[in-house]
Length: 426
Picture (tube, rainbow, N blue to C red):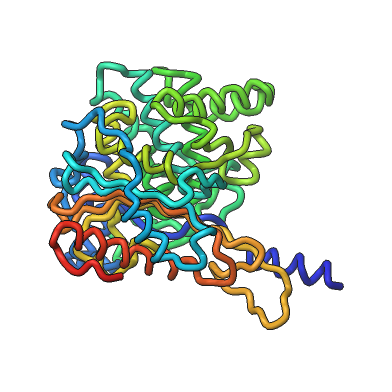
């Protein structure tokens, strides 16, 4: 009986990685064809029923840019003991259950770096979707090395139809068509169509595992067929049915894992090795996935330097991370309302019966993982304050979403204090 009860609790409490947090500047529809952007833009004007955005989420395409291109050789400096001490004080007795890396580049000539267990390694969860985005832009650059317009044309003009690779996922995505009075939210269904840009947006904004698996599917096709991509649905289906699993696994590694090393990262510290859905993993065998806070922070630094593939690719990845909907976890801190936040998060919790303990979302007593990465620019449209952070935690029996939010508040006040922009009190 206890075994049955434990399995029931586990099934109810093992929540999929991530949560809704839409991205990309709202004026980007003409460039990308992402319908969600037009729906959310119209919602700000009261013409469509949808969410109202905070001030920090209203930057336009021309205001969202990479900011360290003039510092291509900037690396993580030596860890600052005072910053380390402040980070440790914020976390108190739970500091040992965190891995954190922070870099303040508000003054890029004098960057400040701090970390707690920077080499803490764990499954990145939905933060691993950053690697998927990197791999897509690498594949596009490989196919069209001297033609950025062609790359973006592939993203905009390639239509993707959801198939069995989406099975199964509980995340809902925003669905809207021109003329609809309201934005609909539901799980992806077989047959749903969007362009490749739209699937990238669903992957990173709604953090849809189904969308992520479709993007990885398209990535494999792009790597295999090159300029012959996109391919007809029947040809794509035949390819995955007829190609031996060993060859598919090798292609997945070449498409998804190899770009990590090609872009200057250690694959032993940053890797997304598999699909995000059970069916995707059945069709294409993968490997393990993991990340460390230090390597995730290096990802953000190289993004700002324009060194993820190239400047054009880095700029588009940053736009995909720009939050333009409900802010969650780290990014939900009230002190960030007027800041521009470029963000990705993932979570997973598991519970088992325990006297006096009630299993709740993000409060697992067996596992309670929460990962967040963020670039913060304050105020929005300005780099007066500019810092990057990667947080990985496994704090049991506490609401990790709230813990990350509280940490964000304390960190932001600390950075403000360093630059005379406000109180540095936690």
